[in-house]
Image 1: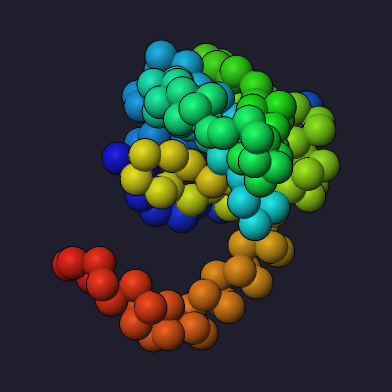
Image 2 (image 1 turned 30 degrees about the vertical axis):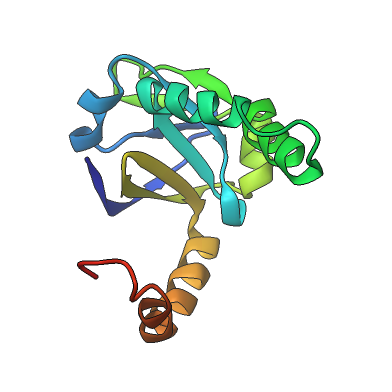
Length: 144
């Protein structure tokens, strides 16, 4: 599973080093796409295929279903780790997430989010400030 928060720099060619503890889970390929909250999401190929299958079953007659499937699928790109454990983030995704130099890689169990550091700091501060309220709203989930 992917857990933890890692601060890295994007190099001049648009590459980021994936934390070494995450690399084996991406060895069979990965897909990067637009994420929610203006971050990027990196999925192991197997997890991505499961998600894409679910997206393909959304109703085509509902505008929100079409919009969300387009959002996720049209932005997706296959990526592979190079010999140094890096991936290249396509320019259009770097622009979407405003990843210029400093980035944060966040493990979220079965996927990875990639954030512009400034956005991540603001998002995390807001979430931490409201964590009690968020937890209370999610109270119906057993074990939390």
